[in-house]
Image 1: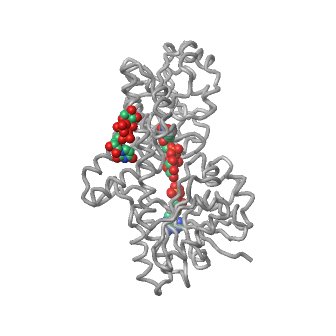
Image 2: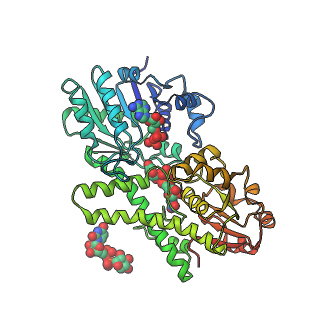
Image 3: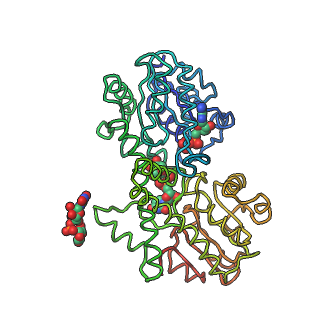
Length: 460
Ligand code: UDX
Ligand code: UDX
Ligand code: ADP
């Protein structure tokens, strides 16, 4: 009854939403998302999806059980599919050669081996996960060593969606990028995938390249985006010393059409699963290919980001007379950006870690991240369970979090923080009431008028 079958290995932040959109737009295609993590699959089949994204729940509910399925039967799904997306995680390596920088490809490799073992007949394998350039080579080697000539075609199709806006990005992508080999089989496979996206994406936005350009473009796109943030964040520090206003500077430079207005928002630092990981990966690749100057250039983007996060925490400590021991500090927002429950590399985590080391009592409120998410992330950053138990409290509201606090810090730009009753929050805080805006979402003059000692980013 279905014209085509797609299987996606990996039901994470990328695989889940992307496949839901393909199912929504291609009723003639059967889409099955598989994962070895049973809990995650159970969540995809429940009313509480494992990923929070505006609009996602509706799309999943509309298509689940029709042409969209979530399961743990990885091998069966591989056997049946015409197209297999590989969307497993590629975290930074934590051990051995390249630790802390290179991408760990163990999940990719195990997925490739599983495909080689189970697949019968011709299959198109699509790399969806972000991977270092020339990964397709490794995938191809594993597949070819275990198959008949021409059985597998490997394509690269990196995903550019941003969390929090995944559904909009998937609906109307700036571009879809597909890389394939310049062979007859490679080009035919490429056309099959182009035809899937052409069900809703205008053809001129579907770019096709060779495999290596496609793989590399994903890393470079993220590196350029992150570089803009580190650039404006570095200037935020200069603004603080010179009475320039970083938001005014961003507006002024962004008006130049050669620069453009997006991704110039100064902040406490970028987070998320991609930017730092991909930058480190790019740095590692440049070194690997004998380009230390290029490696150093991109490494600086990460260093400025680390500095921005620690500078923010230091500023809080300094403003509280160089000691925060036993002082209550309200943390407003923990997710790495608004409209997501994702904490991976969240700047808030690093700020909290530094404040905890200084002995602060933290009262954390985030609309989507609760105790489990915060605890997991802080443990990952090396904070002990004992410290978390003693010094971290999860509040149910911004009001509860700020009550009798010495200072409050906005670390995620959730919309609801803009419309809080800041006058009454001021009343219930200890004085002087320090308010740090790590996202520059509150108006400076009005907030100061309420009585706050208000400290936005990059405003003298
Ligand atoms: C620059 C700024 O563009 C302008 O806004 C400012 O007022 C003065 O400095 P200019 O130096 O005259 O203007 O020329 P521009 O077009 O910016 O080029 C500068 C150099 O960059 C040239 O050598 C050009 O060849 C080079 N360039 C520019 C590149 O190598 N690649 C590019 O993509 C763009
Ligand atoms: C990013 C890329 O945007 C996306 O194309 C890619 O597929 C995955 O990585 P994501 O990490 O989900 O997406 O979110 P993004 O909106 O890019 O934000 C990343 C971080 O940068 C967040 O912490 C955000 O708060 C921060 N940021 C973003 C700024 O500090 N200032 C800005 O101007 C923009
Ligand atoms: P991303 O943000 O790239 O989507 P996630 O870590 O959220 O990354 O998701 C990757 C998913 O891939 C995880 O749920 C993990 O369990 C799954 N996964 C990893 N290896 C395999 C495998 N060999 N077979 C099936 N699923 C896998």
